[in-house]
Length: 445
Image (cartoon, rainbow, N blue to C red; front, side, top):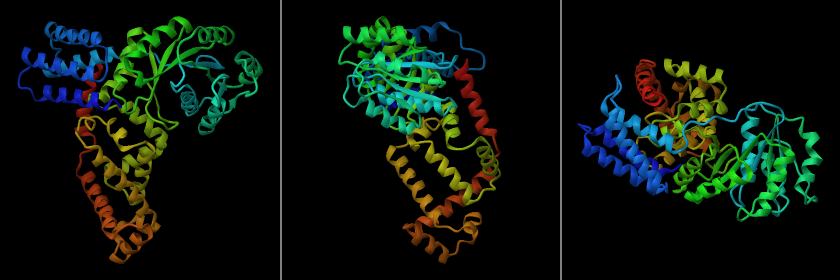
């Protein structure tokens, strides 16, 4: 996510950390670095220079808070100003009544229909009874696509492919939709914000009275997001924005800052193609990840989806004692797999995001974990619970059964023994709590 911008900002953080003194010369150099990285991330020039001036002015005028060094104070200012650049802290959507209607609007190709499915899945996983309503009567196969996406979220979808009047479709299903907690409404788009589109959105607004009207914008349009956000705010009275396609685009910074400049708050961001690749946008957490400071909240959220709280607590106790078996290691790997690509998980762990680990290395580690799971599938229950009984004959059998080499089986066993040894030698919580406490002070002040 915004990899180039993130790496550049991490480089700036490193310069601050390595500096002996923080003086005007260093400050000017850092500001130039920040300007360069934000401009390369397609952030508006005016916004970049305004942010630069605020950083310089604040560092020169503000007194360093007690308990912080000058370097930490500068990092704190940088962090706060970047949070402000992407809109500052945002009120999450609160489901205050039932049914709660969320209407998605936007131009053609912005990803509304896919986002409707992702939103349905997001709310469904949080215990709400969710339905989807298809009101795009113009785009060919729009309703087929909505039904296909809805099947992944396991939420019912209401469509009428013969009807060409969106208001009639709404009236047809409005009674039935009252049974649900949350209703996600997919509307038609156009190639541009035309009078016809504005008129239709106003009619739907008047009839449905949606609780949230969310503009869906594709991140790859960059700074052009500002004009769209302004136009839709005036025409459709939008209450928030969802930015899609945040993965693998250099223009994501432009879209984020452009939306915030209009006062349109970003509610969610799409970070991939899968049904679960949708995140509630929290400016502080997002900037923390960009700066390599991690995002514990998002990590915990993903972990909850991967494993029950009781199971996670049980595994944690075993690992901290160094008293775990290959069965426990296997369950840990399964949970990690469910949490998504290793690159995404790593950037959520405080300190890990700032390490310059090549993507290729993480890909190797990911493949290795996959192979180790295959190997463990070839172990007997007794071998998984007591790996010390693995003789050369058992190793050969496991290698043959999994289609892997004996060297890979031995590597897995070595990793297991090393992990137990390391965990037993650690003093649980001491060092990591100190680090997290310090990072927490910087982020929450």
